[in-house]
Length: 115
Length: 114
Image 1: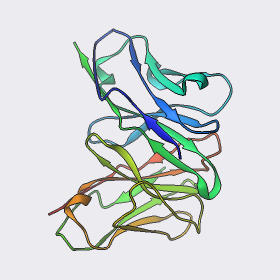
Image 2: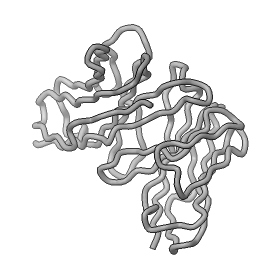
Image 3: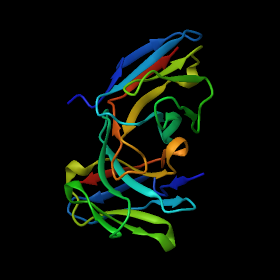
Image 4: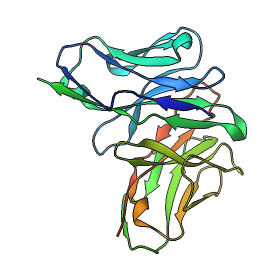
């Protein structure tokens, strides 16, 4: 069965600083990988996804993520954080198909932004 | 475009009561999911339905049942609510997990069991 680990529960960065949120997954085959963002009291919004091809994927709001098969990682990055990026971020892995397909989330990383 | 609609948005139950959380999507998606979100636990999969007519257990299915009523609707039932089921519940749908698409989420149902 697949699993997702987000090692950092809470990260604080200064506005304008760069950001990297870590995500490691466990899955035997090529996974489908996602990053979602959740603002307080809201549902989840997709930031970006990886299915195949170029291992560096671009998403909305200036985010990008890089799939590294050798490290089983899919880290999320942003070169300059804005105060509005404060939210909780979830990495997810989708696996299988048909009746075996499911979508598993990590525990999330809460991002705080200092002015 | 309604997307994924969950009802109700808020609910308070007494221990032992039953209720059904409703979820409907209008995107002709094949797969639907129910998650619960608790502080520090992320989203944990309760049940999912990869296609109409199939349902499978996720990580935390105990105390819940589901019905994939048709392609649009996927309901979650609590037969005898317990305080441990106090949580925020999210429904999600995806066209097909192995296709190059994303999952769309409802706005959540905040359930409190007293």
